[in-house]
Length: 384
Ligand SMILES: NC(=O)c1ccc[n+]([C@@H]2O[C@H](COP(=O)([O-])OP(=O)(O)OC[C@H]3O[C@@H](n4cnc5c(N)ncnc54)[C@H](O)[C@@H]3O)[C@@H](O)[C@H]2O)c1
Image (cartoon, rainbow, N blue to C red; front, top):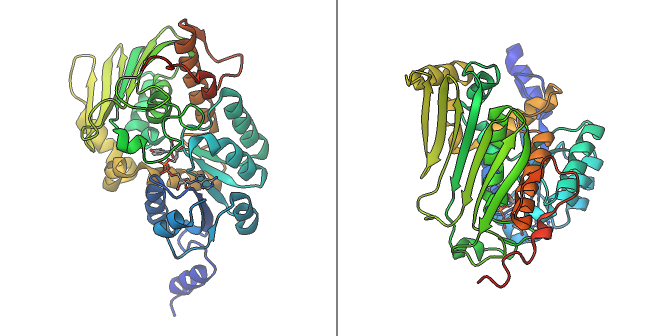
C-alpha cells in the first residue's frame, strides 16, 4: 500500500484531514429554520475540515427535516455539555443569541453567530469581551464581507489606492410580504428581531463602515411603517458621520417586491468609485478609477488569482466562505474576517440609529449608555 494512501486511510478513520494534518472540527447547529439550510450546505462544502455533530431545536420536526441522520437535542445547554463541540453555530431568533452565545463561550466553544449579534449594545459588548477573555473565535454571519472581490476592494481602499474616502451609501431593498412575517411569531417584534434595519440591513451597514475604514461618531435617522403588519419598522433611513468627516447614507427596507430583492453599496473616493450589488440573485460590479475607466476586469483577474475561479461564485452561498474563514482562524489563531468586534460595533451603530429615530435628534457614537431594541417598544403605536 502506498504511504500517502495509508496516511489518508488512517486520517479518515481518526477523523483528521489527510492533506493538512488538521483536526476535523465538530459543529453543533442550534436552530434548524430557514438559514440553517445554508449552514448545512456550507458544512458539506467544508467537509474535509468540519463535521456536523448534532442538531438542536425546540422543534424536533424542524431538526429531523434538516438532517435526520445526526443526534438531536431539544435543550442547547445539554447539547453543548454532552457533545462538547469545537464550533457552535447559532441560528435561533435574534432575541436568543445573547444567552446561547454566552453559554457556548463559557463552555469553551468557538462560535458562528448569526446577525445581529444580540438585541442590545451592552449585551453585544459583553459577548465581544467574553470572546476576548476566553480566546475563542467568533465569526459573525455578516455575509457581505465574504462576497468575492469585496476583500480586495477593502484592502485597496484602506491602503489609500483610491485616495481619500468622501462618502459611501448602501441600500437594502429586501422585500418581504406578510407570509414571511407571519411565518414565525418572533419576526418583526422589537424584543426578538427588530425591523428592516436590524434584521435585513445590519450586515450591510457593517460592510459599509468596514470598507470606508473610519469609525461612526454620530447617527441621524428616521424609521417608518409602510406595508408590513409588524411592531418594528419596514423602512428606515439613516446617515452616519464618520471620524474622518466622511458621511455614510443608509436605506433599509422590506417594503419592496419580494420578487425583486436588491442590495447595493457604493464607496466614493478621490480617485475612484466602487459599486457592488446583488439583484434577484445576480451580482453586479462597477469599479472605476478617477477618470471613469472601468477596472472590473483587473479585479476579477485578481480574485481568480487569489481564490481560484470557484471563488467568483462565493455570492451564491457566502456561508461556505464564513465556515472556511472560521476554521482557518481557529487553526491559525487569528481573527475571522467578520469577528466579534464587527458584531459588537454593528449592533452599537444600529442602536444609535434606533435611538436617534426615537429621540428625533442626532446621537453620538459609540453609545455611552445601554440601548436595546426593546427601548423602541410602542414606537409606532397609534400610527396604524
Ligand atoms: N446571515 C444571513 O444571511 C441570515 C439570513 C437569515 C437569517 N439570519 C439570522 O438567523 C437567525 C434565524 O433566522 P431564520 O430565518 O432561520 O429563523 P427561523 O424562525 O426560520 O428558524 C429559527 C429556528 O430556531 C428554533 N428555535 C427557537 N427557539 C429555540 C431555542 N430556544 N432553542 C433551539 N431552537 C430554537 C425554531 O424552532 C426555528 O426552527 C436570525 O437571527 C436571523 O437574523 C441570518
